[in-house]
Image (cartoon, rainbow, N blue to C red; front, side, top):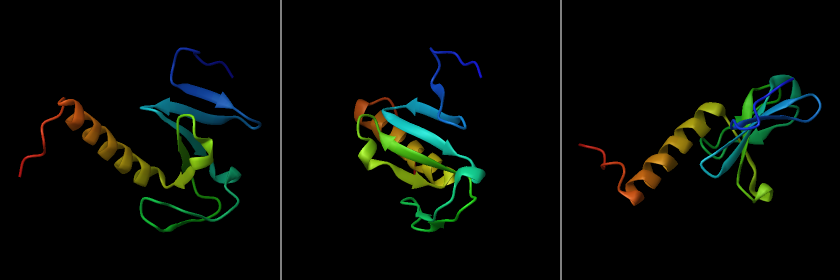
Length: 97
């Protein structure tokens, strides 16, 4: 399966797994047919059941810190991280009330 080496997506493993690097985080999509165990999502503290699409995320350079997240929980958490990073740099104004 071809892919662009310059893009953020990578295909790895057998069968192929979709992997992405963004903002210092590695993200791997776990397809339902590959999800065979129960995990606890750190975003909502609920279980991720077998055969459920989810993502595995870890900070760049620290694969031992990988965690399994519901996709929606990770998207919310990542958006929060990006907003906080933008505020630290002064790129993003604080939310209005």
